[in-house]
Image 1 (cartoon, rainbow, N blue to C red):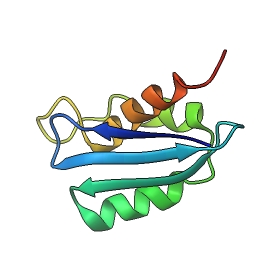
Image 2: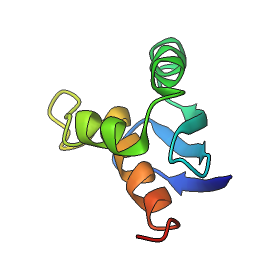
Image 3: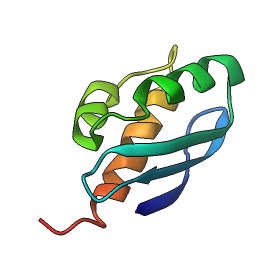
Length: 87
């Protein structure tokens, strides 16, 4: 099991806790701060999914006029977690 504690930037959320198993499947994800209901739902939807699939789908999503969003920040946390896996 690998995990990352990611400090978000440019969003209402503050941190993302993310873990995945040796097969690069998301096992647990928690976003601290932000819109609790939406983020809880999003976290449940992506749990059990492959890291790369989720990263690709969430990357680049803006929030209003902001260049980033909580989903985009989750994709960045996933990218950090993926660095822990050998190629």
